[in-house]
Length: 320
Ligand code: ATP
Image 1 (cartoon, rainbow, N blue to C red):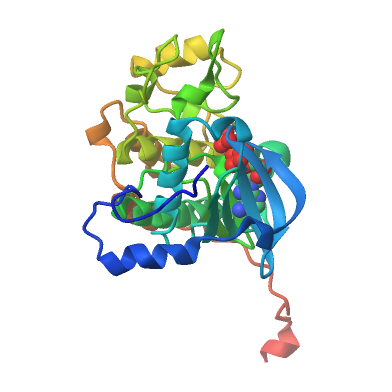
Image 2: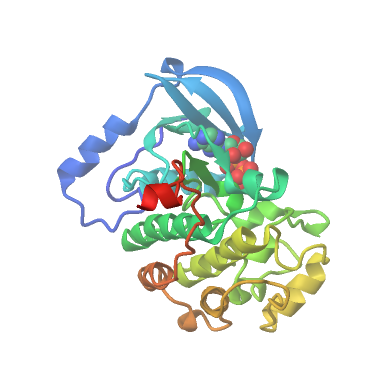
């Protein structure tokens, strides 16, 4: 097995990059033996994530060995690295490098120390005030707006891929191997829990019952905005849209343009309007993240009732 090359023609870039740029790509190569792998943090579709030491704490996503001989997966891996190296934003996980020598293919990023929004909302059942919800949504929009400006679609924006670290949003897993082929087994399409509700109608309609030969889902900036709508809904309601409904029913409803009812959602019109805009059936009707940021900024802030730390004694003697 030969090391994966990442030059300007192979890494998914437009090819307009200056030649010296391809030379500097070597700087992202991390020898696998330099990493000191510690405990596993979790498993995803593509491999295992470990905490590791490499000039401090890092997260290492190791690609599953089964994929090493799969041309498509190697392409996807290269593309992920190529996408990652273009990103520098305070609301995006920091890409630190990659191990490019099979059989050890890995992505090294900063280690997120907080919890994911999923953990706060669905596991801890924390309630987010509207002010906090708005702040979180603004940071997500900033990170996502940046990604889109760099020509990267997230393709898997969901609360499991958004960390909150001391009030700061960190988005992970962007532009990843979101290959839909991986969701298929002999039985047909296997839908991961809590995944469908982030899929825009045009993606739902493109799902097929049998394993496709190539990528079938038309991910776009607008489909990321639809996913953001679902994150906004989870922050507001503390649950997933179409909760407890079977996948077939969700695919049918969303594919035909039906939306989760907001009848029980106790919040202002403006807040619901943002949700409805993001969930627009037609991709072109969805706002971009710059527009979303301005809508979020315009939301009225809820004034917090403050109890004075030094209550003023307004007795007759003090007044006189
Ligand atoms: P899927 O593969 O379907 O996207 P997933 O998002 O759970 O599922 P991974 O992205 O591989 O899978 O992540 C596995 C685990 O590692 C998750 O619990 C995730 O929160 C954690 N994780 C991923 N990246 C980091 C990071 N940079 N810092 C800390 N934990 C991380």
